[in-house]
Length: 391
Length: 107
Image (cartoon, rainbow over all chains, first blue to last red):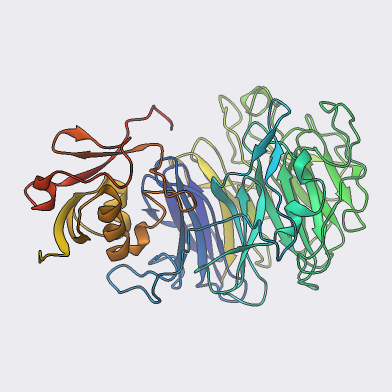
């Protein structure tokens, strides 16, 4: 029988939850990297035993962790504890240096700061790892301050795909309230040279040539808080999701509004429809139904919790616009948690499982596409990210 | 072992860096002479490469904001990296301490 492995990043460590295909009995291991913020963990589609984790701390900076045995043991790429470094000097697996070289031609050194002045780019942390579809040693990292890095040696070293910052709009990017993070990376499974990324608060961008050139893909987004609500960049994109069978169709949870694009982001239409509020962070797509979407509406950008203290996932089976509330098994009173942008995932079992984690430390699963929910864990630290592997 | 060019230096690391390096509360490293803040940290990072970037910023080489350096009851955090440490540290009678600052109550 197939099984699933859920990778949970929290404010105080990483947890690995496993169950068989029934998804009713769970084992939870952890905390790994206790006391550290684990922004994100993700397994390689090409080798499910290969998992990358972003371990970060305000005191000690960024650490990259890798597991080659499905999360049982971890090490910093290139430096296994108890062993000599695999190369000398050891490759700096936690060094993310912005590329300002002449060779890549775009020595971009500043972006817009809160007060409108220009501000130097300063690396803070990795928000998201995206292993490449076909090679476990190739992995992308989305970082704060917003930039895209790539490793081709299993995370031992990183280089920036600098033309993203350098394509022209970079000096106009500015941080959102949560920082200026590159939080979404989607590699087109049919065309690995096509990559979508999203940044708070700059918007969404696309390359069709493996990162050599980029363009903003924000036409149709409307953000009332901006001087020009329809500007080319500056939109606070919270998350973007894609069904692998339809790589030209994208779904976006924006700061306000749920959006869809059917032309690879060239234009967007609002599909918020009958949602009780179209503010939220996460969005995902059913594994087998490319027009079935999931979001968790959050009351507002001033009140980061569900409406009326009732935690509800909303599902659309029509690609947006028509939404239904899913509540069975979820707390319907006194619930004031948030669900962050990278904290929802789906498995690929025949009956698609939906997963999400909350800032209250709960991780929920629905083994039947959202109809019924049950907790996997209820008292973890605040959940920052959830990913699932179908094994 | 001490000789004319190196010295055995005791270094105390904060909890999370001990875990990262999988060591106890105190390690001993061979530092170049003269024994300075920089020579000690260079030796720590050479022997425990997994700590590179966690004590000093990669790009600037500067101490991370929420870490402090102490030796012989003195705060060396704001001293230049080339500052020579007390002879008691160079002789191994006193440790060089890397301490995580008590910096607020983030969750």
